[in-house]
Length: 123
View 1: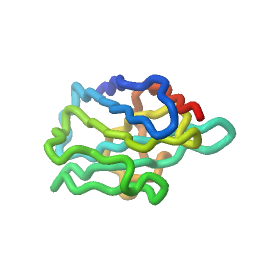
View 2: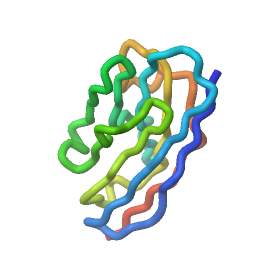
View 3: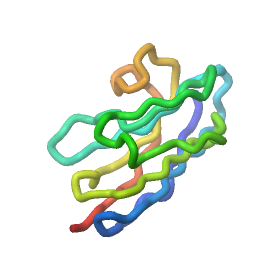
């Protein structure tokens, strides 16, 4: 079982940007998928963006399309996420996940999670 460590959260005003990073270590099964999820107060954990281990193709939730992106040079040991044009509705705890789920944006299919990093966007 590998370990995931997120970093890069913080506070920003609406319209600003943040960059999250997730460092993966100890994974022996490859390729594996990696994804970002978020937990907003009062809501279920939801998928934000994912990258497939086989070909590094990416998938984004509709509510972040055009604002968030995973850099093309992302490695499967570090998952970065650039978040632009943030709004208060993006406030929450962001989690990194890794594994071999059939559905990369389904949180219940992941068993390996980081501890999360807080993102706060003020209006």
